[in-house]
Length: 117
Length: 109
Image (tube, rainbow over all chains, first blue to last red; front, side):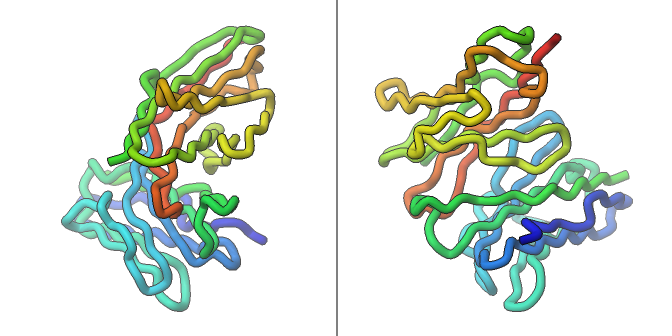
């Protein structure tokens, strides 16, 4: 099992461009979470998705940010018209269908570091 | 609303000294709490969860419902313990973790 795979690991974008971050969950996992880690700050929840469904996007900025998890393929976090403040590490995590309280846990990818210049 | 607070952003100790990383939570239900560790620019890894009552790499954490705390402790810190530590609380539905702001532990030789 390859674990949660994120790409690209590092991405540089100019202000105003679009950033697309991809996340392939662990095999058998149908739940995906995106977290953002700003420099020198902690981890902030952004969005929780299941296949073809956004469950909770309470942590997503209202503008420019969107996420999807299609039936086929990886989950995508899309940031349009990036600004310097978007520079951060974006972590994806996945978990199996059963609830975390049943002994399952959430597994993290290695993160994608976005730098906006 | 559930919330997790880690009051210290940075904790610096010498090798061999005891370590306590503080975590306080607010939650209306029965809490389920976790500690995650992130070594330099690597992925977060589960360190321990309170329901399993285990000790990993010498770390332990006890849930204190009266004080709403879940502090992480180790009697003798090692240099390889230097990392970012996150306390996390599981929501009612069992499908989302809320993280504290994290504490960076630096163990000096």
